[in-house]
Length: 450
Image: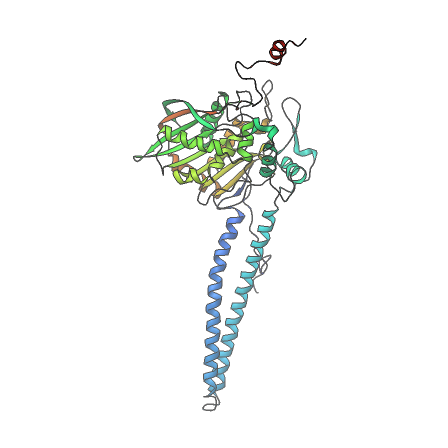
C-alpha cells in the first residue's frame, strides 16, 4: 500500500511561529517566521541552480537522442530501444525539474505573502473592552494591542508615521519649550561594584536609577581577557524633575520625533568620559523613553562609527519604527497590559537579529502602591520576565541571550560610572525684561503721565 502524502503536500510551505513558552510569546529571531522564510529563500537559490543543471542535462539528452538517430537503421532491435530509453530519461529529468520549479515558485509566493502581511501588520485585534484592564486605582487603561490599533487606525493615517506627525507638531514656534536643546555631561560618580550582568538585574539597576529622578545614566565597564566591553543604562521618563533633565516628558519628543539626536551625542560623550575607547563593544539597555533612546543608538551613524554597538535590550518601549543597522541584535520585552509599547502604532520587525517577547500574564498594582502608567509598565514585572527569558529553551531566545552574555561576560567587580545628563536651559525670550530696563510704569512716571 502506498504511503499517504502528508497533509498540505504540494502546496506552498507555511512556516509556523514557535509555541508560546509559558506566558512568553516570542516573535522573531532564528526561530521566527521571517528567518525561516529567509532560509527557504536561500534554499530556493540552490534549487534554481539545480534546475539549471537539469535543463542542461535535458539539452544534452536531446543531443544524444539526435545523434542516435543516424544509427537507427544499423540495428532494428537495439536502435529504437536506445532512443526510447534516452527519451524517457529526458522526460524523467523534465518532471523532476518541473517539480523543483513549482516548489521554488511556492516558496517565493509564501515569502511575498508574508512580506505583504508584515508591511500592513497590526496586531489585528478587534477594539474591545476585554483588552482594557483596571489599574490599581480603578483607572481603565488600554493594553498594548489596543493602543497600537487606536494610534494606527485612528490617530495616525496608514500612509504616515507617528514620528513625522509628532515632529511637525513640535516644530511649531509656540512649542519651543518642547523642542530638543543641547544635552551635555554634568557630574560623574565612579565606583567599583560587584555586578551581575544579567538582563533581569540590568533592568533592576534601571529601576533604581530611575528612582533618583536626576537625569543620570549608568555606564558599566566589564573586563574580559584583557579587553573592555560596556553597558549603558538609560532610565525611562522622569516627569517630576527640572526642565534641565533631558529624560523628562519633553524628552519623549526628542526620542520619538528627533531620533534622540541630543541624547545620543551625550551618551557617546559619557562613554568617552567613562574611559571607553573607539571600537569597543557596547550593550544598551533602556526602559520606556530610555528604550527609545537606546534603540536610536542602533541607527545613529556618528555613534556607530565610533563604538561597536552589539546589542540593545528594551522594556516597555515603543520602538517599532526604529530599524537598527545590520548586525546589531536586539530584544524587546513588552507586556500586553502595557499601552506604552503600542504608542507608536508600529510593530517590531521580525528578523534574525530582532526578537520581541510579549508577556501575557495578568499583573496588578499592589494595594497602596503608585500604579504609574499601569502595572504592565512596571519595571519589576519586566525584570521577572527577563528571568524567564534567560531560562527559556526557545531557540530564538537562546541565540539572543547568548549574544548578550558574550559581550558582558559572567560578572564580577566592574567599574560603574553614574553620569548626569543636563539639557541646556531655555533661551531668554526676546520680549523678556532685561536687567536695568525701565518698566512701562517707570516710563509713564518719567513722562509725567497721570
